[in-house]
Length: 179
Length: 139
Image (cartoon, rainbow over the protein chains, first blue to last red):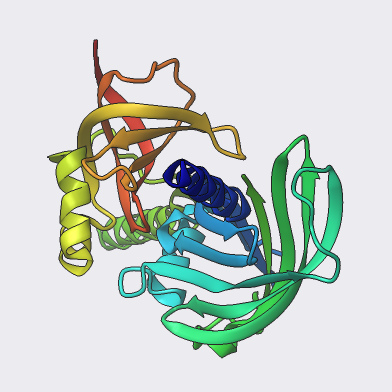
């Protein structure tokens, strides 16, 4: 009898930890960037970002492949890969950090939350601490993570002829991660 | 005679300048890499995942930015945020797979064996293939 009670308690405990530690993950988060400096639009989209997010702790990991960025202009895409991001040498970019919210988030109820994120962003082989703001949207049990922030290309040792001229010194990054 | 030679030299020069200009500024801008006619490296989904898991650097040297022709079992079909179809091909590891973004939409069903050709863009937890086209669908 004691054994039975113990095993029931154990099962309940395991179930509790499982439900409390919900892991959200997607392979198709969208990352856009825009570094238009002049008349010509310099923007690209990547629809293959990996994102894993633990809702109880707020821990988050983004992982993205540079060669997955698509430009309308093939020539720009080639320059982006060869001269600026050197994507053969540095094929990956990632962000590891935490999402924090002032009020606790209930993932079972629809709502919008303003959040902040802090962590380490690695681009072009250079890691930098970043702080940014974002939003978490919950609709019908589906969680969407949104963020927009700017990065200075210089901080990540991205150098090239047109930076500061045709290419903006700061790129705007847009993230839409649907789980 | 002299004028003819000079004129033809000028004509050749003008044509080559125009051709170079066209190639650099117009053709390269609008023509995305087409892998339809490229010779691809044939490999099974199970093997490419294993190679990437064993040694990512070596696998990148072998496959990164190259055309690959992957054979595998489709486990999942989805659409990305821009409306393109994506396929997940099974590997021996439940946490890893080959994730392909197709050039167009598809009516493929899960659990079918398929051969896709695309450009390998690297490895996160999955091997990722972009601009993929379906070569063959076995039932």
